[in-house]
Length: 393
Ligand SMILES: *Cc1c(COP(=O)(O)O)cnc(C)c1O
Image (cartoon, helix red, strand yellow):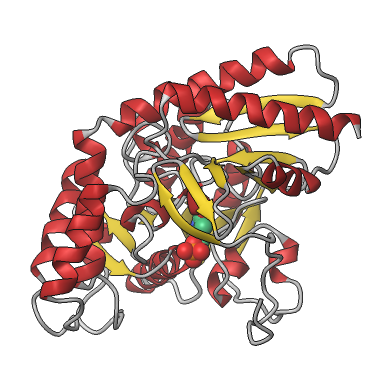
């Protein structure tokens, strides 16, 4: 490893050199099963032929021109995102935190336009929205914030999955302009609201009653991860604003802030911008990703394989003390243990399996959307041996 990289990551001792589908190979020729997909990014798996073709073709024509010109691929991707979400307008950026920055700026501007001088946004405990100053301030995890004070103000925090807490704020705080919430919390430990659709529907009602914007952070849940294009499509509601990134470009950096109705008209000329955001290469990757998800029925596959994995793990862990629960929303899967289990990442790597541990005691799986039933069975076998070995160690 180079001495010239800042120490921001605890890196696993492995260097991957190529991939295909759900499989990766390291520089020694060892083959690994990828159940993390670059943290919900490589939905199409590795080296998907249609994606490779689209990116190569676009790179040979035009990679970047600047947003001061029309960009045909960007217009096409915006049209497609609005078609599949039922929303109206898109701002393109390069990452999840930037998509949330755009949402936060949009909410503040919306408030100022209504005459609220100090607009505030409701955010949740255990949330994760990114690591820029505004998004780490919105994030409900002290570890992400510590050392970076003073934090950005204007956020009011409530417990996740607690409608009464939001109602209480609504009664007492006239400065609120929006709620920012993940439909399923990813980094926070695959936290699924007890009645997921009822929760979002209740938040929608409160927003409507008070003229607030409902802003969903779908950076991790979006792009077919939970079995629908976007997690809100499991419910009867539509958000005013939605942030996307991770799976959208299959690894080519792209983020999007999508807005509907009155929220879509808030940003006007000069209010926001990005040098790289929505360039031809990134948008070609986004279009190829959405097309492949559609053509290969990957939403249906995410739901099917997600449920197969949960049932498989439940069967394996039925009488295993130490495993508290297994939960999933499509291919967002959490296996909660009764103890901190960070060591499982290393043990899994030794067993040629890529997984992640979040919230200290939750093994998190975010497999590629293209995973087959046979590959899912292989994942169950490998991970169960690792978890049982960990619990017996
Ligand atoms: C990963 C993530 C982000 C941050 O995305 P970056 O691209 O790393 O900035 C924001 N919100 C959620 C829900 C995420 O999972």
